Amino acid sequence: MDTYTAVKNRLLRLCEEKGFSIHKLALESGVAPSTVKNILYGKSKNPGIVTLKMLCDGFGITLIEFFNTGDFLKLEQEVR
Image (cartoon, rainbow, N blue to C red; front, side, top):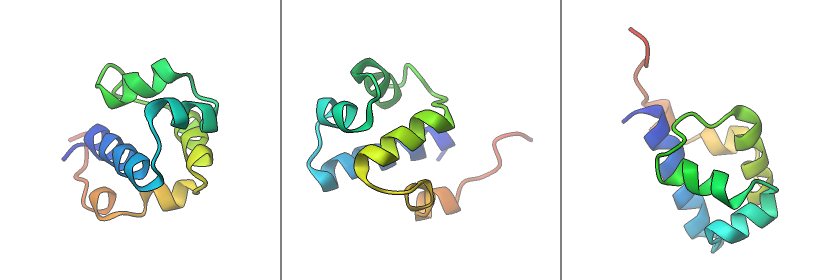
């Protein structure tokens, strides 16, 4: 799994856990709905850390909680 897929999957899981739609996540986080959609649907494969922090704020979690999953712990090095 690559980093983009891990981020997308984590966002989708959190939306499901919290009962958030894309629109609700955008409202709660202050991130434009188009930005959230671009991340989730593959148009933006490299979301910035500030955007991820804002999304985490919308979910009410820290960046550490966001990244502290098996998917991120098992990622292989992207640059070889």
